[in-house]
Image (tube, rainbow, N blue to C red; front, side):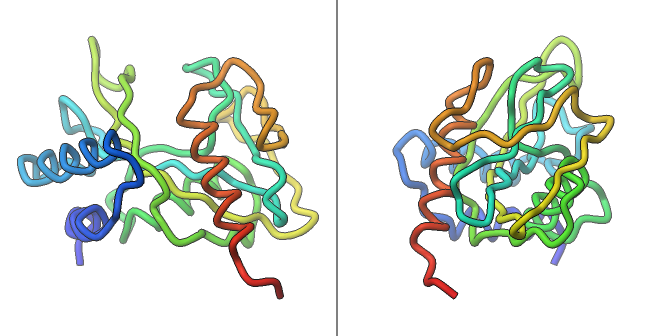
Length: 184
């Protein structure tokens, strides 16, 4: 299955938790149907991306990057690569590349979708973002990459400014999934 086909399958099967996200889910599927290159950063006016909230093993904290272009605290994420097999693979790869944490466990997902204007292709382009969460192993140490100005753990309920509501929402949804998992 191609990355494009995987995205169609994932979004077709996903039950959006809000009416706003349902509208975005439908919009993303329409974009995929209209653009064979919808998974690639070269696709204008927008392309699919994947974001991952990296949570501590107990779900109490979220690892955020101070994004150099956005100048905000955000979860890990980015563009799809031709070599990626699935949206989940993109999410896990981006989380590992930007956090430096090995052994991340991707939670079943996606957990959210979001659309935001970015600077990929002037004057404007859209990231059609499919959002996941991953759990770090106990005692995991993050390693800052050249894709970040800073990298820090924050309590899920105390995410600092500047950030956005999508970051808070994704962290809380990931925390809820971790809290609902059986122990052991």
